[in-house]
Length: 143
Image: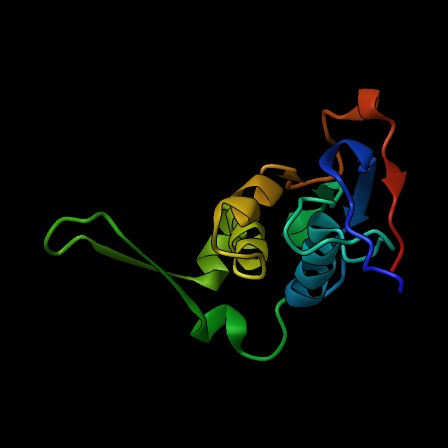
């Protein structure tokens, strides 16, 4: 009887990919980024291991939000103190910190445990098309 294949941490080969978000909906790009970070595109995907690759997202400020999301969607954060709720709409967030909007979208699509946090450390988001990871020789990811 055949057993299910389970990858071992030392067997996993990590690659670097560049994903261009220019002119694409933020959520669609974020789901693809989460898929690559998680490792679901690989045949040796194992749910309890970090089998994913490193992802560099460029042109985050050129990502689109469809419909009325720019005006109606809000981002909430709280300082932990009474009255410490901060609310910002996505129009302001995409103008001032598009990297943060992208990061939050991908974070919500990954597991909420230490494995998800380890996967999130492999994400780098840049506002424009310049990035600092030329030494890793990243490949362009098409989807």
